[in-house]
Figure 1 (spheres, rainbow, N blue to C red):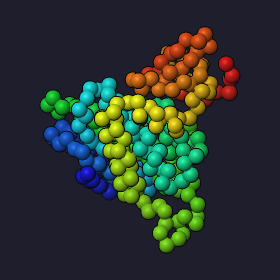
Figure 2 (spheres, rainbow, N blue to C red):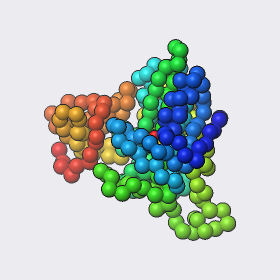
Figure 3 (cartoon, protein in one colour):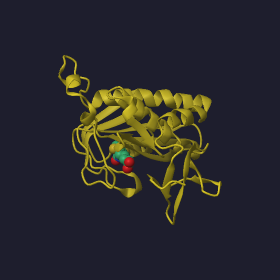
Figure 4 (tube, helix red, strand yellow):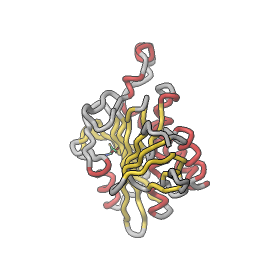
Length: 251
Ligand code: BTN
């Protein structure tokens, strides 16, 4: 595995795109201590001050774009497993589609981008992990890793947490592990590993779509990565894009 690290960069996703457009195909992991134009989903900014991990894995993807999109679930599992090395696994959950939460608060985000180079499809899996700090005044509560590590774990001869590079090493290895499973055995194992950590399956959720809101029971992932929701009338609706909220309203 190749790693390239920058003290500061515009965005590791943008660097991945530049490399791909130059004809580099990876696999390579690009990381930075800080980003000047960190990008979040839906055109939002990802505040990227020193102390956290900002990284992007560039890979060729041997299958189609729909299959590439499901790598975001692979990334979420890899992120959850990486955090498990540091903190109580019971605190960690994944909220559909791929927000990773600790104690119900967002600790990491994933931005997957793709393009073609010749006839080859490349993907850039960007991940931001709050290690030392988290942004304030976010739409939803956020947290960071150090907030959940006990003082005894940091003050011994081998402190458990020593910065962003070891976190990236684990994350890249866990991503590769689950990507191999995905490419050799398909999405079923990924669905299972995702569901084991998913927040709120079997519970009532409200999905805010672009033009309406629906309320239903969160049932699990469909084969295409959509969230299956059971509506009050018993019908199953598949949510492909939108924000999911857990609501106290019982059906
Ligand atoms: C989200 O909005 O939840 C996704 C955030 C993704 C942020 C990461 S940080 C590393 C990589 N480079 C970027 O510019 N964005 C992603």
